[in-house]
Amino acid sequence: MTRLRLWRQTAGLTQPEAALHIGVSVVVYRYLESGRWRPSPRVAQLLENALGEPADRLLKPVKGPKLCAPIATAV
Image: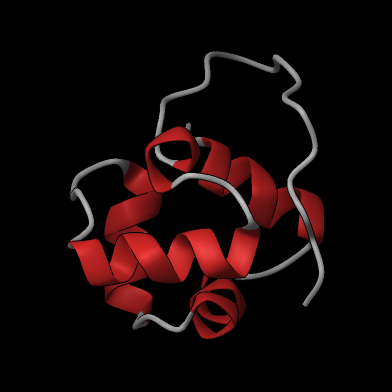
C-alpha cells in the first residue's frame, strides 16, 4: 500500500474521484496507487500540486496499518 492509497482512503474517495482531483486518467491513477508505474515529471508535478507532498513520498510503500502524517485532503 502506498501513501497515495492511504490519502484516497482517508479522504473517502474512489479511484476515479482521486484521479479527477489530481488531473490524471483512472488508468494512470491505478498504476500509481499500485506502485506498478513511476510517474513522468509532469504527472509527478500534478501529484505534488494536488496533494502538497513530494511524489516520491506519496508513492513509497507503507506497511500494514501504520499511520502516516496527514496529507492535505482538500477536494
